[in-house]
Length: 441
Image (cartoon, rainbow, N blue to C red; front, top):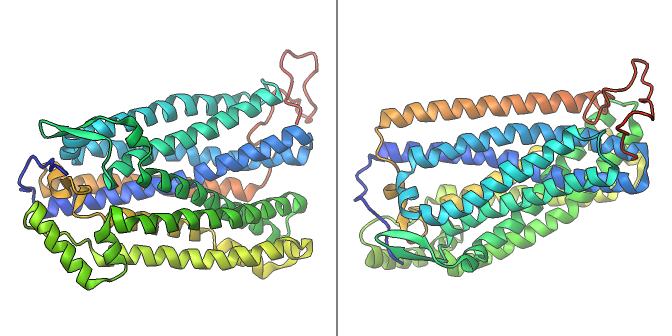
């Protein structure tokens, strides 16, 4: 592979470390919003399909309640994504100069899909609840869901190029997009896409089960509502976890040929690491081509440990969820479900660390070194940038947590998402003669 390096790596080591830390914190933070958004969008769309077919009020209330939590997480997550995008020009000018022609194409499509199509139809879904017919309204949430998938796909196409650069040619020291087909069928993108989608369903399933368990633990009056919510969360999580494991296993297998150094570090093959280091020095010149074992192997082990724990919880949960008595009265299980809500987040972020840290010292594997991709900024400037970005992301995370907790704790209140402002003060339905009729769920 050709080397895109336009500099000799003269940026100070402190600037490089701070830039990497900033990107790791912000990208990882944004990813945590994305995983719940993708999973909840799918579940809400399926719930609304069921509500439209059955016409049962309980199913419609499920859509409104879980849809409210989805909208909150989506809204705050969009802000984190916008903030994260600023980093490419601010901290990684070498990456945009050397590989922007390829990455820009994927990110441009993602932006169009996410900020124009997805956001537009989500707005229509939110504000058109009592203004469209049930099938039209249902179609809107499915458009939102599929465009969310497309958005995630194009992000992973860009990330897949960083991990396994294909579909490009070199012109004047820059990577230029040459084969769109090779880019979008990159195995590092496709396998990650399946892994992320399934993992998002696991995250949303654990979230639904945990929130429902909280209300059942407190002996809620909405027993039927949260019994259905708990069962939905458990029965979604179990198969989704198995699919996640399959895609994860395929990715680990592919590392042997696509990223042998990462594979050797993960498996602690000392002799193979030394041989690969020698080969890379001969090919690319002096340097340390061994990624940090602490981050690479540590991230993988945390991910696998969290997966094993979730697997046992899902197996036990599937059996318990078949018993209505256990769902309603087993308070110890309720506590376990509440405590296990962070587990999918832990597994996803640990897997992301393994994926990203394991390709170091490359930002584009085998093509562009990380030290040559960072902007020529002073350590003081990067410290200030890190402080601003970290503070902003922490604030957004706190706001999102508070809003989710507040609305989740309230339960399915009448004034939530889909509330018809045209109802009378006594709760009576609007006059049928009004020009806009409510959806017939």
